Amino acid sequence: MKTYSNNMINLRTANIYFNLLTKRDIKNNSIYKNLLNKKPYLIVSNIFDRNPKPSSICALDTLFNIGYKGKKLDFNLLQSLTKSQIFAYTLGNNIGYKLLFKTRLILFILISTLNFFVKLIYTLLDLIYIIFYSLYYINFKRNNGKFFKNSLDKNKKINLYTIHYWKSKRSNSIYHYYPNAKSTKSDYFYASEFPEFYSIGNGLRNPKKNILKSIDFISNKDLLISIFLLFETYLFDFFGINKNTYGRNINKFIKLTYLNRRFLYLLNYQSAKIIIKDFNFKSIYVWSENQNDTKLFSVGLTKFSPRNSKTKIISYLGCTSFSSRYHQQFIPTQYELDLGSWGQNIFMLPDQTSLDEIKLVLEKKYKGNNFKYIKIQKGMQRFKFKKIKNNSETNIKREFTFITHGTENEFLQVLKILFKTDSIIKKRLLAKPLYVRLHPSLSLKKIENFIFLLNKDKKYDLSEIIIINNQDETFVETLNKTKVCIFGDSSLISHYLWI
Image (tube, rainbow, N blue to C red; front, side):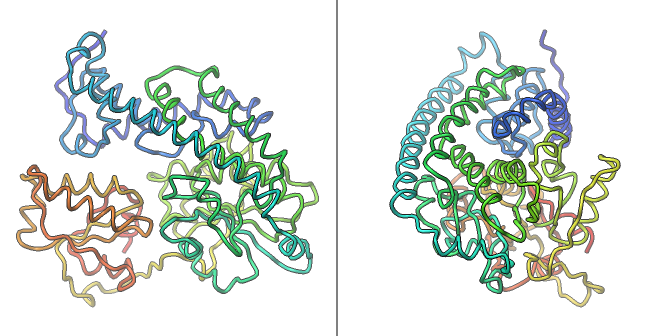
């Protein structure tokens, strides 16, 4: 029976409930330990995805359950939600006959259904494109002779580093992840994912020279096996024995529109078998944010690793800065460790503070573990956090600076909260501009388009917005030039407090 309460649910309360659901799901998923040992590729399935996207299972279940219990949402929480989350809340709040009288809900369902089928058709066409291009590449275009010769030379200490190959950055994607890559000319880089590419087929055609990809290694047989594994993972999503919730049921269909990407991850898994068996890499650095592309790659490396292999498999948690509260998906679960999702349980982090924190967390959670921790080389550090002894040495020139993280949605939602007509921050800004320091992965064109759209919306009154050029000043300089720093979805706040 539904119960109603006038209590408002704010961001903090919703986050607590989200974390409770996440812990419950991790505990429930441990029952699949034996199944995962037999079929490790199933780790790519829906219920094991711990990446905290707005449309993740626990995110949608959180909002649906809050709505079902008749709770009202705080304004700031409401403004931070995506359309799919708002729909989950509204559906929960109007479950039953009331739904039939909600014109906006019915319209949203119709538009969402149409979008779903458009995306599904596109991803199916791209899947066909990937398969046929892979066959052509493997049989007619691929030439790995020189690479095989170099990598099998036991006297050469060659490393392999995973990257995401960005459409906007192309070959410069390497330096986004590994700033010292120019000094490691003998090493190779493996593109495990292709952000900003709508077509994975087009993504696979792009990398050149020392940037490798799954189809540089797999055989025709591996490609065929991957097709069957793809169907098996979706059969598990839809017909596996797991509890039905709103989030899980919706995600089954959402993930259908990612057929092409899941297929890529399975190709990564198949290529890992060849890489670890047939090549003599000194170390393989897996850029690990517990996303499916590298998670499945690590599982493949670990599962197929020969007993006499001397290759080190290092999980590089290369986030800006690790925070156990913010990066809960980076804290390994027991079934992930058993499966090899974190390679050989060798962890490398971006700075000493992050390394100390994850070590403290893991030592507490797993008594008597065999984890190893590596201090990052100076040349590999993506951000330099230098503690300034006297803040008075830097003149404060800005009232507010918004420091973003890695999603355009975060940027949009924070601006909506800051510039609603009755915003306190808007009043404090007066005629002064808001400075914004963008995460390197964000598209400036998309950000400028969001600003343009909000300027046309009468609900918001935007001040002048100035984008900081990250090349002109360090992160620490940005902090020290600003009176008040605004953080959205970011772990960088820990460094702000430390400085």
